[in-house]
Image (cartoon, rainbow, N blue to C red; front, side, top):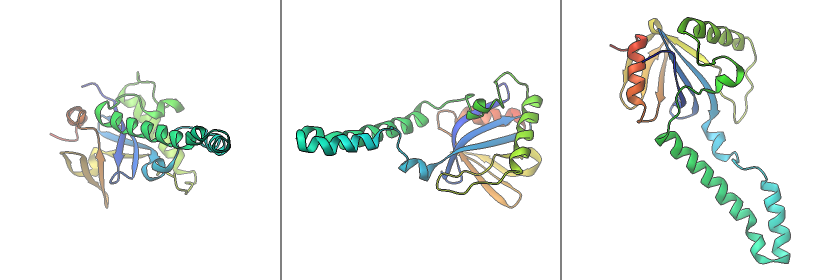
Amino acid sequence: MRLPVSFDNVSYFQNEYRGDLIVTKGIVYYFPHTRVAASHSAPELGGKGVAETVGFIGSFLRPAVGLAPLLHTAADKSIKIGKFFGRIFLPKMNSPRIRNIDLWSGRELDEALQKNLDDYIEKTRKTKLAFGDDAVPKPIRFAVADMQNVRVKLKLRFDAGYDHHDFRVSPFVLGKLKLALRHGGFIP
């Protein structure tokens, strides 16, 4: 397997966050982008206010139009269910969200990507973390020398420093994760 490789929408910290897990030679990076609890209540579709207004007005004019808010909610839930099944059965690789901020084009070699990611992590450490319902932690990196008890069964687990870390990928790419970790020098 050619490194670096990215596993997208990986669950972290007992499914509290989702983000991109990037495996390079000797270093694993994690860039969280979604707080799962906040994403459950966040709408996938825009226009909820419009649907409620149409439903309110429509309830006076035509009772069938009053169903607009219910149809909007059903469509929103359908999209969330579709995204859930997509994460499980059609997992993405090598299209992390960090491409949107020009950290990785997909053509860099390990050393160049590690330098870009390390510089970005160092820069973000100096900024204040905003706390809110949808706040996510700052990106983190784990060098192979700092990781103990690395094991991959249904999820990647290891100890680093005084913390225990767990990352869950789709079972359909679990074999690729093991192969990437083997090529990166994390597991025998």
